Image 1 (cartoon, one colour):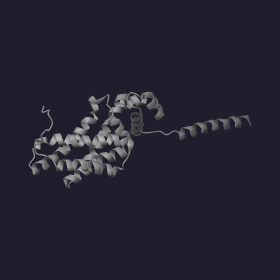
Image 2 (cartoon, one colour; image 1 turned 90 degrees about the horizontal axis):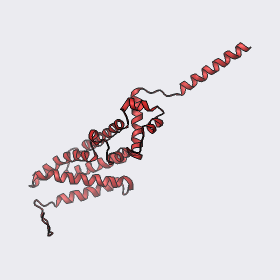
Image 3 (cartoon, helix red, strand yellow; image 1 turned 180 degrees about the vertical axis):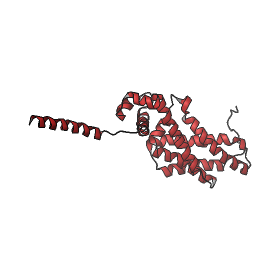
Image 4 (cartoon, rainbow, N blue to C red; image 1 turned 90 degrees about the vertical axis):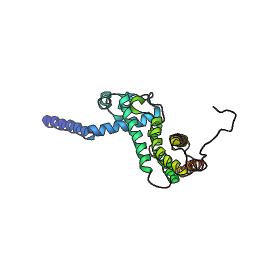
Length: 226
């Protein structure tokens, strides 16, 4: 009986250990990397780069700190990958949205693309609009806006030529238009009023009618001239 009891106990312990092993979720290297990126994105959006620690990232993932270092080399490396992914996501959304159509419709598409990104990738947008402590390797939100403005610049350049305006000024107007949408997007991120379509309509209203009444050679009316 004693032998049977020990054997039973041994099987029980073995089964228990086996049960514990069965409950553990083992991830591939790729799955673990994606998990760490998701956790990092959430924490960076909530607390910023300085307010987030490797210890907290590892704890949230249920791993030790060396695992984070193994995949990204440290917090800076993880942050750089997160920012790079978000920048590419936003740029891709804007680029794919700018399809052929009337210039006013292109403005609508650009406005919707940014607002859609804010709506669908809120954490990513919060990260992008913060000053990046590793901007040297990842770029900044300002540089991303400049990239988007470059694409809008081509559209404005064609429109300027058709209206007899100086096409060399297209970059200036592109920066102004995209900057207006981006700053409005930052404001809308928190208030979320009015609805997205209404925000887009008002942005395009200001941009389009401003362009519609554009003077070929604008002049200052105040006393200051330089």
